[in-house]
Length: 129
Image: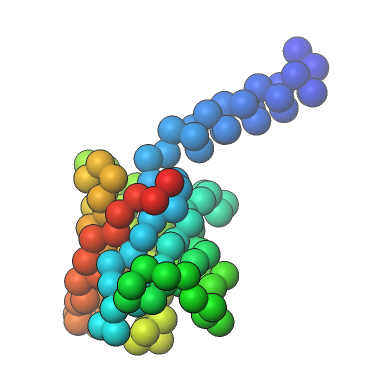
């Protein structure tokens, strides 16, 4: 088997694995303290998953400009089994990074994070796409 054929097979196998990852896609965050929300797109980044804030929404759900759009919200996220994921989550409203725990339940994602023993419930995110 030639080098090109082997590389193509590896690429196809990797692509199939990525497509099967149920966390991939865009998720609407739970409202923050001020009622604002966002859309976070989760995609592969190296051996882990990352989530980028791609859209910001006002309390009425209308898209608004936000300098935080494009910011990485989820990093180093990996499946740990049973629909659970662990990694890091950045909360722009608190300017704080937490150790994250995500629990996938269909099109709902229960989000929480802890730093120095202090935990924060991030609410439920809903799949947009």
